[in-house]
Image (cartoon, rainbow, N blue to C red; front, side, top):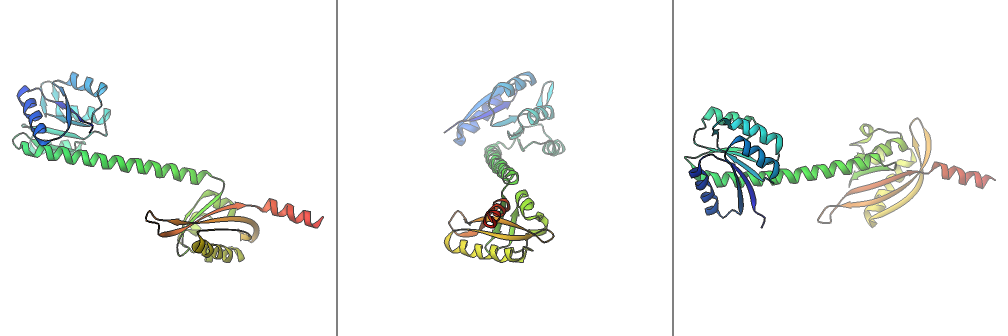
Length: 260
């Protein structure tokens, strides 16, 4: 198990030893890097990998709020907890408004370990959400940038996603189709064929077809559509993914060849 690296700003040797003893008794796997002044605090922030910051509120020539401001700037993801015997209620509220994770009074030391555990759990959850959010943004950027039309529907064919490629090919903006059913879109016979393709996909898992669609002001374009059934993590059907290509140029060339 990797040890938690705690940066502890504390000028009192006695209080630093008591804090280390509290953490040892809790069973936490930790490694404390102690700072006794503003200068040593800044240096340790620069060179150490810090999982959590624990500070006294009153350090000679260095205030707790100053330490908090530096930490929020240098290590914004590290939980910050005040462990002090001199912090008043108004000052404690001010620290929370300025970004502190929690505060614990030295007169109530048994609150320290639960506060640290909670802060670390919240930080881990936040990081998971950040990673997931970054991944979703990355995936969304890919879907927006591809030239294919990407359409996602629910099992009842209600449209839930419509990318820029679909807008270019089918001449409908996302806000014109989201929340509507594929069979109700103004594609002429193409709407019926989309709907039929969906039902084949739902039965077999995949489907493919080429057909003409009426788009925009009534013009017609040929499209090839690949459909795939989407499933949840427990393999239940959840919707359908359509990948649409404009094949009008190829179809026109085929018709010209037939005419010749």
